[in-house]
Length: 599
Figure 1: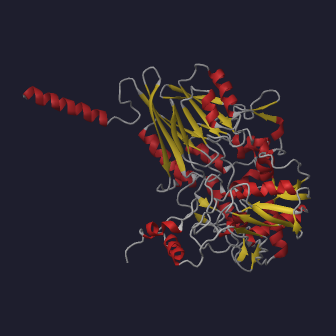
Figure 2: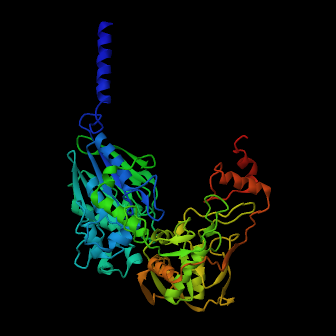
Figure 3: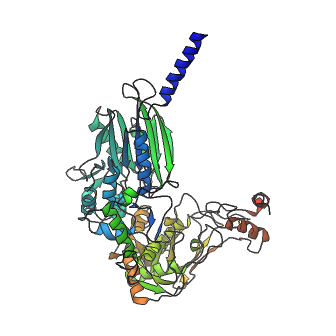
């Protein structure tokens, strides 16, 4: 019995010793654990601040990410940090201030250097200001910037590197970066863009792997694209799934571009993707045996909602300066420490967006509004086109009553798009309008609300000016646009028109989806956002005006039904979730009201 007790005590001691081993030490002899952290689509959000709203956010930003990154590095010193692109664009700070002076130190790159990034892959938005600007900014990084599938005519890579080998705990990790090859669709015509060839992501990875050979123990691909193709459904040039089909030796695939969480394993490949703006980070723990083979792994997608922002990132001198400079810029050029005191850009007599009837369901996409009529009016005036199309990029976009600052303009038009005038036929316009109306779900009898197809991001839904039309949601996709009038007469298929549309929609939809044959005949030298600023300066105070040139038909929302009113009350008080992607139906009334809290 004495020997048995000694044996048990020894066993317990050994077990305790194993449990107390640091995370970076393997659980089995000869094994090593490495941790790979991945970010993507940060879109210039360093601070965790909504500049258009002039307030702190609660769940995003690079400062929050760094708090978590430090914690992981303490748990496992064998950690590398990678970024998957769309990093230097996306906020007023980046787009309207620092990306216009690329020779100056850039706050995003300063933050990335401080945070200790080991490598970065390019995203498509890095190209928005042209090749020279992109390289001036990204070259400030103290880490390699990768794009294995973008080369000039002499075969030189756009950043000089397509892949890099990092060493961590004696493990050699090859990191390959590829970007969606659709860059010319969105930014063709920008300086230097058309001097390069953008091959498929898969081809870029295949070529990089051939160059790497057997020099690496672990293969990581940072692919700035989604798993499914965005345009090339047959060839998969812009599909991360195609990368895996053609290159089965990849150990870890980081995806991006779609702003979606992704956590999956295909064969021996771990796949991870995160939401945008620093809302999430991917953590991948890989275990390697004594022969440096990956024998185990785990992917976690971590939400930053409960993480405190790192004061160290916010106190980086350039970051703190840029943050305050942006606030002052938004307030109309104020130079005070609080950013107040600047001259407003203009003024309004009332707010431009109606109240939502149902919480979380944007009224601005259910009816014509003053916000969209204003944008389309400005596009028509600047382009001289017959018809205009524009999207409500954010469901809550609005111009408030009173003085307007740059943040308000950014709120209703968040992208730095330019404006095109394009020839289009009546038949092509109808096809474009049908494509846009695909964002809605089909209405069925008893539905109390209109809802949206989750496969169609809100920024794809365009509203049109210069024509009158109806959207019949009782019909299937492709058959919804009805009673289109141009100058009071039914639109003819062979009608010759000109269309005002932004550069992104022209490239990605009108051309990318083969909706039109004509080519742009005019392009603005300034951004649409600049046009809005100029309009405010000339016409303020402006009054919201709605011409109600379009409406939704083919639905009976049972507006007078008391059961509908009761369901809406439960939605608006938070008892029921907003029905954004799926309608509530009266046939489910008993089930829906059963969740009502007891009085």
